[in-house]
Length: 289
Image (cartoon, rainbow, N blue to C red; front, side):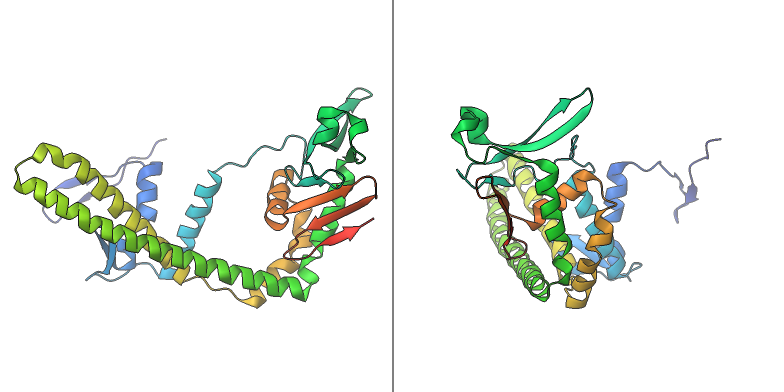
């Protein structure tokens, strides 16, 4: 049974009918600052005369979820063969990248490994390192990563880096907003001149540019609200880091690969010396034979 749309009567006595939600109107509803007691005009946010019906903490949380979904595009990159270190492994012998590959033996048994670019293109006799078992080097890196929450130095570095990123993001938004306000002033002056000359047909491109600038300014102001409400506490970071190990084992391979990509810059394997190194884990270099 399909329910009928909601209906209501306006103050003027007109009957209105509800419409099904779409992605567009739902997104517009969730990002509307009017529920915060604010109004938007020409890309700027102002305090409204009406009262807020949502608290800012809830609205901020919703915006964070929407921003996260937007960055991942609602999808996760497929990682068919569970390669956790794609693009991160470097050959310690010739400093060339090592690529993930695999082979099948005895029917369906899959063997994964990382092979040096030199060995792959010029032959195995051209590189001392050649290749390394993918599970071996991945497990080495995972064990190092699992211990990150136990290091006081890592906690300090993580907190410092997050604070620096927050400050840099705020400054970047302020700089962009300042530039857009100047551009808006110029565009409005140009539109005024065009209108005074009676050339209305030429005003369309200017109007479009004005709308784009105002839209971006509104997005910046929304982002600034999120950042203004962001708090970075060392105790919270410590708690998150301590949960890393138990959570890791229940993640899908593509999620594990994404986390490793965020935490490490490169993994160096030297087949000749028999060593593996991870650099950096928040500023550290872990090496093992």
